[in-house]
Length: 428
Ligand code: S3P
Image 1 (cartoon, rainbow, N blue to C red):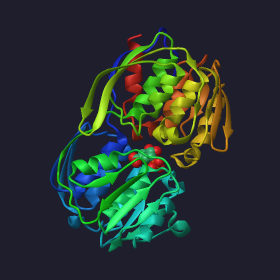
Image 2 (cartoon, rainbow, N blue to C red; image 1 turned 90 degrees about the vertical axis):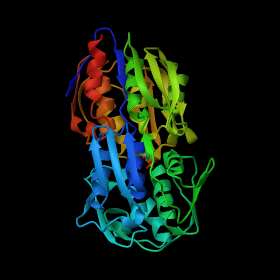
Image 3 (tube, rainbow, N blue to C red; image 1 turned 180 degrees about the vertical axis):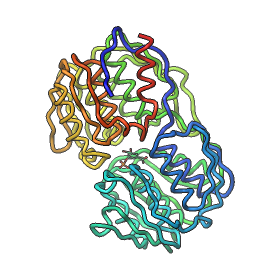
Image 4 (cartoon, rainbow, N blue to C red; image 1 turned 120 degrees about the vertical axis):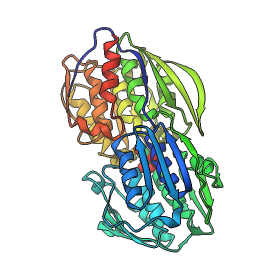
């Protein structure tokens, strides 16, 4: 896919597609509830479709019509042993959350995904689940897929996670719902809290504060109606595009602004972006707004510490922003980037360099000097949706177009990314 400059800027209004993290949880939790749950605004990305496919293999009836999903849950106890390997595709959230569910089920299942999943660490989840009594095995003593789980009687634990990870926290809490006693997860920084918010709407009592979340075992989920807000991680690419392309003036509708996810907004504000928040409201348990964003000159900042988990998925987009900001943007404390769909320190730095950016990789992040005129040329997603989108944005401002290989990966989280970008370019 080749992406080139626009004449005057990006203009118009687009509706940001559903939040990936929330869509996964909506299908998964509704599958555990007894009764019919309705979901609207569901993200039809490949990752979330993998979650639906896995829940169907576990015996749950699910109807999906575009962004409308109906889940006919029969309760946790009705889940059935899958006849075949559960294929989780490229989705880290599917495999890690599902492990928490399967850890307490009295049957055997095997989980496997694509080549990227096969490289990603699973011991951060299998370790604590084993402490709870689950029997899990896999390559490298249960760190790598394929994973085999034989669930059973679990006991509650108090677990201090070394990483701020919502996938780890959510898996342990889902196992905790099936465990004897109380299960608590303590984190170094608060990770996204969609699980805590949504479990509450399913009738579960969850105690949470700045660093921990707890559930008591044996609680039942009750069906609900869920409205999925737009994904701020997807919006981040359009916020970036409009901020760096001269003359842009766009409205992004339906952007989820959960405080554990809105680090990119804080960063954009500090960098000097021009954003106005319109129509602030709630979509179920989650705050949402429309954002008007216009081109603005940007300045470099340092991004570190507790801010990192609140914007970890947005770093590829932020790195592109930083190439156009005055000064040196420093991103640190972000080692977690190394274990995403690709090693995103390497892929972001190498790909941006290819296109003419001045970027240096560090042990726990990167340093980006700006503003620079990007040359353009060839880039690759390396099968990572967010790398594909970040590189596409470079084409909007580089001297020569950017030709991105492997753009099919973008369907994981933002299937209509290019359509929406084209729409904004056409109003130019
Ligand atoms: C997610 C949590 C984050 C994030 C991922 C989605 C989730 O991963 O990067 O895209 O839905 O819980 P970690 O839990 O590994 O931080």
